[in-house]
Image 1 (cartoon, one colour):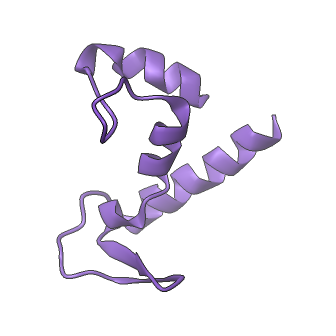
Image 2: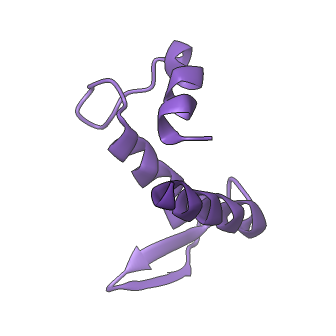
Length: 74
């Protein structure tokens, strides 16, 4: 599923970016590639375990990353 298709599906949720604007494809890609949601943080170019609880498991996160790579090639 493309980022645009995902945005169309979540439009009713009224998701916005940090500045309050309607969420766009680049902001959505930023969310989907952020390791924070699997309990990790980026710091000085490295991804490390965070002290916060994960929202999704690592397997799902990595699956999404592979799908995003595939969608860039299409």
